[in-house]
Image 1 (cartoon, rainbow, N blue to C red):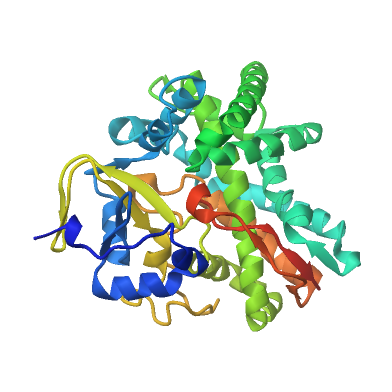
Image 2 (image 1 turned 135 degrees about the vertical axis):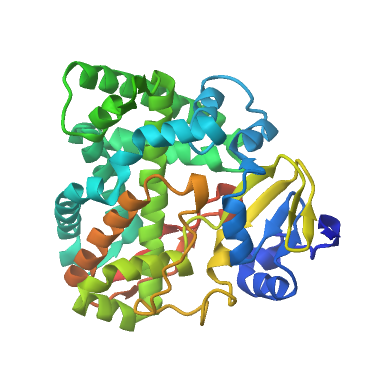
Length: 398
């Protein structure tokens, strides 16, 4: 049984890795599914990532990462510690069982016409110009407006939710400590707003997601106010930042592969496998972190207890042992076993919602914009510190 200190070393903070991690990961993964970094074990093989995502010996690392940055008490810590991303075992299973029915494919299906109409409305604002800055003109609007519609938030408050969503992206960042004032201010505003919204829905339920989650229960069990607030805050973050960046990554890929964009425009029924292929090739979440609460022995290696374990979803999605032509992009290939949504107990609760948003938006964009190309160099967010992969600026012409 080999130990972690014998694993190949990878420095994700190095200039070489930051410039282009793909050849480094390919080279290391060819030697070993396990590597080590300055701060963690790094799992690169799809089979092992999939196994460990469901392994009870690994627990959520989010509270641990917050404590490392000096956040170990207060409203922010309490909220994050109560979120599904932070919980494991019976606590996680309880909340998941209470709310999962609100996020099934069947539950999400009625939202699709509104998503499609919203995508049409937003595209109409800029399509006549022949060019756009995709983040500012589409991606920054579509997911947050979808989420606000689902929550029953009136249009005049959508901008406030977008600002709170921007600030809360720092919660998963390795630079959280640099943005604490901004995050705490956004959290206070969001909590006050959600408290009023929840109270209003308790008095006058509507056909919206907040009312569904308030009513969700099993044998009298209900979400506590803290649990409900944490869930809604998590939905705002997950429903906004990840989806807007995943849409932008899709557009970047289609600019690089115009024949695939043309195929999607001609055959919109391919949008479901297209979304899966986009998320496999350029998933918005490159790595998810866990903490080993006991020694983990797997496939000839031992990871010691209390190690931080980085599960590379990106490396898993490009593993040649799992996918033919792993770096290729083909929306007809049927390579739909991507892990960007995770697996196991922490499989993304809102996966069906995110899929629906992208499946409704991309055909509208393909039909309305026609052929697309980059109109300048995209600007990219620092993935290694923010945890989210995507552009901050994406100029397109069409």
